[in-house]
Image (cartoon, rainbow, N blue to C red; front, side):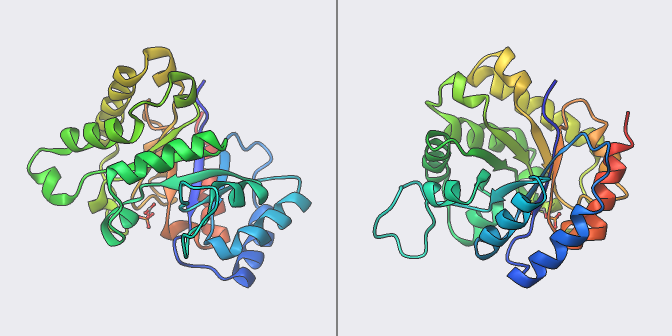
Length: 256
Ligand code: PGA
């Protein structure tokens, strides 16, 4: 059975005080029968507070970072290292989010270095891949996904590949009015699993959770998660309010 993961990507929202208020309201709403691994990726400034609150609440969630650099320390102004994240009990790190790629110019090669560093320091990378609207309209989505996965995961041993999570986030569906269509998304998740099989083997590819991200909300989460190759969700806007995010988790847990 693959791990099912519901993750909050708070992007550049939420101060430390807002994080504290969120956590208190949210922790009380997590259903008793919850079957999902719940991740929160706050801004770096709120990681320490979230880590402390979570330790007091018997680790009800897992911490994720939104980015990191690949070196352990050094003259890299503005960057955060894998060991700094480990010190705060961070378990996952989002890498290659389309906003990092598009706004901050991160290349597939840079993402690849970060993936290898995360694995080396025992952080689980959430590798984001996805095509732009133009690429989709030109029918190039599979080509793009294949390249992003191949470059980011090249040279990673099969035994380490088991620790990664892939997040398929079509860029045109992020922060959009409408999400992608679940059935079409399933086909691309199945394709991603084929690429992962090619990069390792079927047994490893079967174990890798593939999340969907892009305008997931309470109303559509169940439809996405009922697809055979959609193993979770990476959620932006709808994760910023404790009640809304908790409602998504409740809706997901209603699935048999
Ligand atoms: P959204 O963002 O849920 O606001 O579309 C998703 C993401 O960028 O991870």
